[in-house]
Amino acid sequence: MSDDLRILAVPALSDNYVWLLADASGAAIAVDPGEVAPVRAALAREKLRLTAVLLTHHHPDHIGGAAALTDGGRIAIYAPHDERIDVPCTRVGDGDRVAIESPALRFDVIAVPGHTKSHIAYFGQGIVFCGDTLFSVGCGRIFEGTPAQMLASLDRLAALPADTLVCCGHEYTEANCAFAETVDPRNAALSRRLAQARAQRGHGTPTVPVSLAEERACNPFLRVDTDAIVAALPDTQDRVGRFAELRRRKDGFQAPAA
Ligand code: ZN
Ligand code: FE
Image (tube, rainbow, N blue to C red; front, side):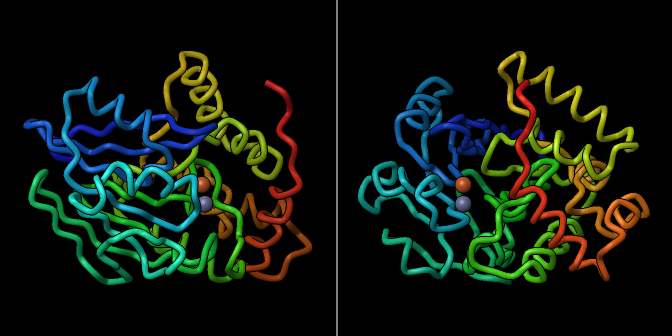
């Protein structure tokens, strides 16, 4: 990420993050503003002015504040092709490029169906805004796709450069680590990540962004081809089967009380 850019995770709703990416002049974009008040407060506190909004998918906890923040259309909104996002916006899809003047930013749009059918991610400046597709040490629930689709989407994100900063939509890292340990118990990188996440949450700081390299080392949903995950799921046939089984187990998993 370039030196004169600043990235901020703004906590919103119960466990969402709205991402702000700002340059030294104070021009900033917001990603997935699920609500207005915390974003306005962060913009004021950091002396930033909003110039554009990026949306990854139609769920209310990601778009709820977009219309109000953009002042009825005076600030550009970029969003996937999905009529359930009912705000004036520029629709973008796989292979499109979003160019923002101030701050000067370029993003490649990557289709990542699975959590929802029209979910997209934005990759640029060494950052990926991936909404509810990839979480730290986890992934989104499959609401509108198949396991094969979701895995293909995660494969595309995992293929980005190793130093890419993953900016996801929720703070789920501690619970995700607790689940990951049930299928990858001897992974030292995962134990370190859990200890780090506990310390970060203990201090009230976000556990993200996190590098993609770290995710490849810790996230079971990116590790379906590793010996550890293959060995943990002996009754599965192939990588899609392993992924589906991981997702099924996670859906039923209760994180132990912290
Ligand atoms: Zn969602
Ligand atoms: Fe969400």
